[in-house]
Amino acid sequence: MSNRRQIGPLYAALESFGRRGRRLDTARLEAFPETLVALFGEGAIADPSERQIAAGRVESTLRRIVAAIEQPVDRRIAEAVFATEPEFYDKTVTKRQEYVYSNDFGFTYEQFKIHRARIIGDVAASLQRALGPQGISKLDLLSPEARRAARQLYWYLQETLLYVESFAHVARIIDNLHVGGDYQSKARSVIASRSVHSDAALWAFAHCFEYLRTLERDDTGRDFLREHLPVLWWRHELNTPFVDYETAEIRTTLAETVVDEAYPFVVAVLRGNHGPSAHKRWLQLLSAPPARDDEEEATDGRFRNDLVRALIAVVRILERVFPEETRPPAEVGEASDIIVWNLVLWGPVDAGLSFDDDEGHEVYRAIRAALQDGPALWTARHLFGETDTRARG
Image 1 (cartoon, rainbow, N blue to C red):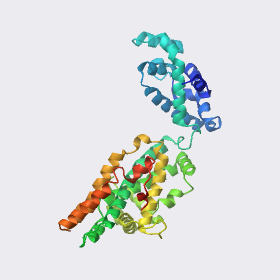
Image 2: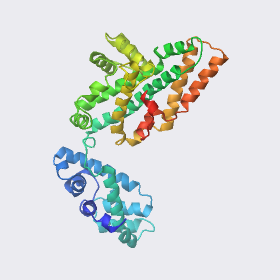
Image 3: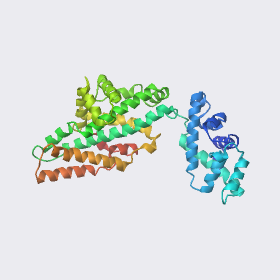
Image 4: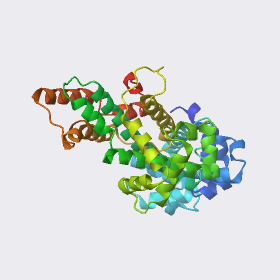
């Protein structure tokens, strides 16, 4: 890294903080705010609560960057420069050097002198990349409670997408079967009936609503929703296929269900005034044949595609903040394959359907051909920037 790149406002701020702060924590970053100003500007940290949250983000990010330095000597110099470890707290830079020289085998003053500037420059560049040149966003300013809700929301969004897209995959397979007899109609009736998979899908979707409501009740969470999504967008886009009173009942039922599992939750939904109609709409959406044309009039297949796109829109926002919580593509594909096999093959068989060798061969062929599109399925393709027109319907 060149000196031209190293010597900048953020480099100077980090160097100054290392000398004056004498301990890497949120309070010291607030007390010596040059680093925050260099990253986000004066205006972004003018409010005390936003300054505190920004300082917390910088502390956690800086600690991750230092811990990730591969060379042990470079990492130890960074720990001493920024006083990230307790043994360096409240010591001058000279005292920190003396501590490392006395206690770390093979460490020399010459190493510190030669490598210090390069390491500060590398850390400054990494910190700039991690937090971005555009300043801190409302998502970065989420309160701890809202941040926990956003992380939970990200988990359940991915789970909901897995099920909804798997049902879409199954509907596509059944629609393309070329078998005689009643297998195709029986398979359609199976996926249109309640199952462990439809229960799990509705349970996960209900959690999405619950954590979105949690975000909306929190000031920082509400700011996040307003910054990243149009006003009340999620109420309209994610209500598909329900009407408002059905969504409210699903959300209330989730809060009142004693056992946090899919089956008792759906049982409780079916006992409500509007639960049966909401459940019927859900099964219709999951089991609908594929929409034939992107301009086709509203059908359950179109509603399902619209719901997938709406879920993905929120997933894309959260993925950059919680990349470590993104489900691996292979895991998504494996889970989807199990759902597909259960619904297309074992479901009809368990329902009493039998078929001859030709029909069985065609079913296996259709399933295997469809699964060759995996293993990531459409969710992972969207998450990792790939595109596939088959995801549209």
